[in-house]
Length: 319
Ligand code: CTP
Image: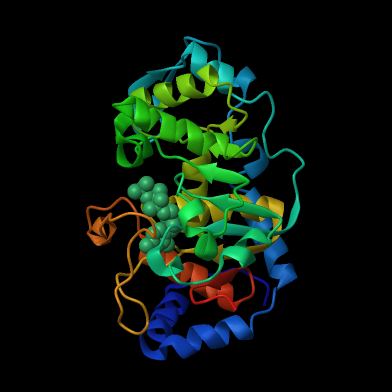
């Protein structure tokens, strides 16, 4: 049975498993896990019908000229001007062109990573994808440090770098980016209005400091295509989270995808509190209906895929 069909029934049953099972289920699931390569290939093929991650991971220079006006992907009434700085940072070709890896890690930001001891294992993967410029150095034992691809929502500037209000915020940011060397920095700049000033400041700092980081800005069609794929598979997400987006893109480049730091629940299986992020005190605002994401539904979907050998989900300690 190679076909990927994430029916409601399957998702409900995984829900029951998660509620009933306690930690032993996950431990057991981790021990018995085996890759299902034909399913991996089939998922890659199916996703390719909606998007080509090699292309959609970023717009390229030739897509625009400075001064072009585009409509925001999730707010079509509002527009953005492609500035000179932004244009100069668009890659000539896709930063993921012809890049293929045996094993990849996609690292989410859940507090479940704390005390996991997963740092070494994460860093042992051929390609490591991280989200929202999450700090690593202070958490290296649990999250590792290798970052080949890292995302940055424009809101991160406000949330983690004081809106660049003073020089030390800017220095901290430049230092964080310089640690990335020539990794890919993926900035969803065309989603909604509001972050354009932040994106411009980020671009200016990269140019001024001649940082080597390779900037990428997702294509205008990416988010709709990803949503379309999951909807077709009966996963009713409103707007895919960064983590789900990264898994979906990674299926194009990676034969074996290992997920860490995905746990969108306020408690662990023993009832102990779990922080929303491993590195800050942000609260679980995303579980309200006002949230743009449906992370628990996404998690259940990923759990089903784990059980079928399409990906490996690590939610416990790494041995
Ligand atoms: N994640 C998770 N459980 C959590 C926190 C995060 O599974 N408790 C996963 C989600 O897939 C999320 C990813 O890790 O997308 C990265 O976390 P974060 O930076 O919080 O995600 P965003 O989706 O970017 O959130 P926001 O839209 O608020 O920026």
